[in-house]
Image (cartoon, rainbow, N blue to C red; front, side, top):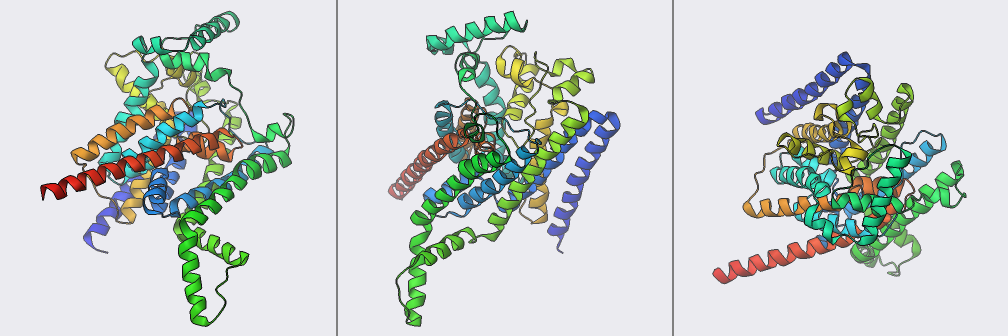
Length: 485
């Protein structure tokens, strides 16, 4: 082992030890902090697997559209199909924390915006976090100014933006505000444009799960497996893999197969068996990515199981209840909750961090629905979902150190511009959909919520636009350099 490897190994032990120390401090402080410790170590595990498998939705889109390489896209679909089976199993035994989102065209639009942003910034929400763990400062800029500060500002701005709202949203939002005051005794803070969007538009849309649709609202185990897993996740994933195979892998595979058969003097006609072999070759082209896809799906399911178990242990459905028991009433929303998804999720917790920072500079972030009602604004060290994101960064850092792939990478001015613009677009695209590539696509599609595919379709469209923009910029830059030469 050379000096660099030894140094990286020491750093890996230091980082892991620091998280162990944090966990022990929480355990000694209050038993309720066990809740956060679970988030920390699942985040750490996600980070290690994401870094090892190079899992990034932006990379998948860029590789597919710019280079015709399907490896990452296929790995993501494998992970989704695997996770759907785990989700169905958990639903069958009433141990799932999953919840669907209001269904509507806003998911597609938000997905397009997010898709453009993740390509421009060089990483999706989860990909940006693990790349920060690798020392990528471009991704750090995207996380801080896009996912943190950009999101927080986006959900709180009003003023001139409120004049652009449809009157139907305003009317419905005011009616919702009056209803909350009359029935719940709570004054709903409808101030920003996003408040009107939530209370006047999104909340009026139905939450759909395929298992409920095919069972008249009374699903059993068979409905979870057939509806949520098979119909909403596995079949669409298989269809997409067939499409990817046909357009991106089949030609090269068949050319190689015919060449081998010609040498052997065999018939060059292709059969259905050959097509299946080609599909399997595409799936196993990178065993590391496919295996990580399966492990990520299983881990995401175990995360849900662990969170549901700890909720049952303490008799709660949200960490906000435990914060209130410990006396931290200011951390929770007016409904007594904090952001606590109960499964793998990115972006909302980064928005909370951004809002916490802005409040330190005097910006009131409690006067909106997103923080004041839905998610609360806990101190960062008492924010469970934020610790999951920190765990992802540290987990990726440990894996990058152990594989000698950690390196500080300072961005050029060009990359700074891409990181800031892309990060802001990711933040903007994650809020109307109430999630990102993980929370709005991966988790929902695997959990039987058709919103996932609506958002995913938008992401693909946006990614194609983003790749086209980058290609245009690159070609323009090269043409200018050649002209100068």
